[in-house]
Image 1 (tube, helix red, strand yellow):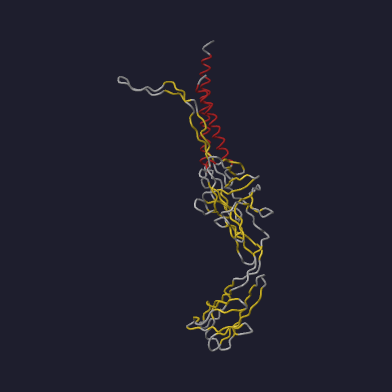
Image 2 (cartoon, helix red, strand yellow):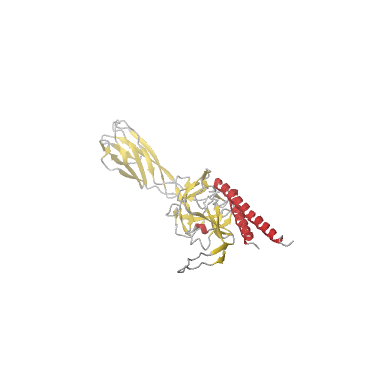
Length: 386
């Protein structure tokens, strides 16, 4: 039988695979996190017709003569270039800008994905659309131990931010130096006990000849004095075990803007909302104004990401040729940053894929022509005997 017949068959197989790969790329043009693939061909063994000859004194050397036996598929490579960003407005939708993969667990198996369309389930666990658990490090007391083992990220909807007792209150603003003697300025401030109980403390600032006398309604605590608008005497006093810092108060004329600038105590609070930062840290916002880290999403990288095996559902499985998985957080050296409210779209280039369709189609047609031509030659051979 003719060698060209089998070369044509191998060409049909190879270009059919190219069509299959290209068709799959086009089908996933709108799949979030999808990475396109490309086929690579190589020739098969060649039959040696004549070996190479060494040159002699009176004759030149000869080159080997070989006939190729067709084409075969060398491999199918995955293109891990960055896909475009699509804004969704959902805080739980995440996009990796740079290198890395999300770590998910499905059926007890650890897999990796670039598709960041996540949500929280009824138990507060961060999951993929098909229920795979997103892995990372949960915080304890607002501290994330990134060196610990991975666990499924959980947003504790019933979490409580503990009360903090007030130890310091800060004042700012201005006490008018031109106020008449006996002028009173009253400011109420809430201080919190260890259990979050709020107590209102009233401070009265009374103008006298020396400056401004400060009292808590039962006793005079101190007198604020100023020179050229700046405090000259003590600027702290204690009320019921709470330090009152008056260093930010000035004494210029015509301005009465004294106010409580802040304090370090608060009542207990419940979780109101959350946000996800560029480093993957999930920060909870509580009803008492406190913010606290509740977890951090892990990312994985590989020495050879091209060695990953597609496992379906836009996920990948590590193989012997990926190298050991390296875990870290977004923004660490070698890891991309996270963008909340965005999804990474497919990196399929439609113009390139349609061009590949034409190339594969023409290659398939050319190899089919080899078969028909070889068949015609065989027909001529069989017609020699009539």
